[in-house]
Length: 461
Image (cartoon, rainbow, N blue to C red; front, side, top):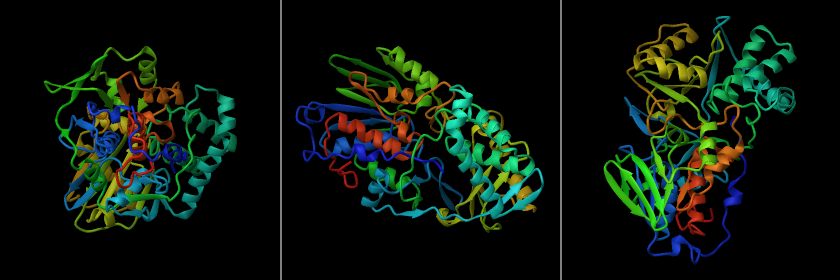
């Protein structure tokens, strides 16, 4: 249900020249260092490289892709981070995938079960309708709620006011709260509903084309972006230094020099302070980083030899804490009987802080057993993500907590001398999405002088 502005139109370039005269990209002595081999860094590197610019990508992990990561789990293949293309029209990721032979398929996963833990009952279309109606009415009421509650209100504050105003109680209130808390916030923006800013939620419009999956996962897109690039793996960058003569990067005991650097690390890494800048970041930029926060969307992947269930599951827990709220049946995509438990916000922060992997898997299985009213067989294979605790991610993606504003994300996009910044957390209109990362990489390639990318699938972007 996440919606997105039609910002790609603003990035479409009418220029016929591939490189702007007098720009860094036109200078044969230009050497661009890119920190991070996620989609933002790889997109910028791909476009700059294809324009003839000398580029080196320096990556902390032992793989490329960043928060896109396609991984085997038993006989299945599953995206552990980003999985969807949210809109396929005017989306550079979709265009690039098409140009490189990566098929995409619509998200037509069946949703057959809504289980209400408090009543111990399963519901069908009526529950879906109730939750969707609640979200539609709540989002329509947002202007009035913002005016009534002020700029320091959370979505939870707005939800409580709206449910009271509507006079909802019992099951109706539970379903409404689930729709607002999970569909709207903790499974989308992924921040805790009691911390997410009411003032800034649901400020975007959607790309056309609907949600879709890249066949085989995002690996096909990532591998095509990375093909032939100079990428140095297992080198966490600790220092970014600039002066009048150029830039210098320290990573894993090595020093890399260039003329420009593009920093594409997640906002969570910038917040952690493990990457230092010389000279330091401005007080204004640091204040923006401090006000922003990273969301927490996690997965528990479970596979079996036999598909013993039918369809995906919505689980409405009795306490409203967001306990394992959704299980996606991705069997047709993964190549084996597979459920992906998706959870975020408050529950994700609790689980990632306190639970072992075994406890997470068992908790997911227990939830399935309750919802399907049967003993669920032990999975043949499982995998648990830890984006929240990953030192190179520090969360899933950026969100706006109470006190943060659009201006904070906009501030992160501003270059600082020879240092540029990219990543999904630097593009307000699309933050939290893969196409935000791609568009930010394109933005920085344009800024360095690539007027009209020659990369197949990205021409005209």
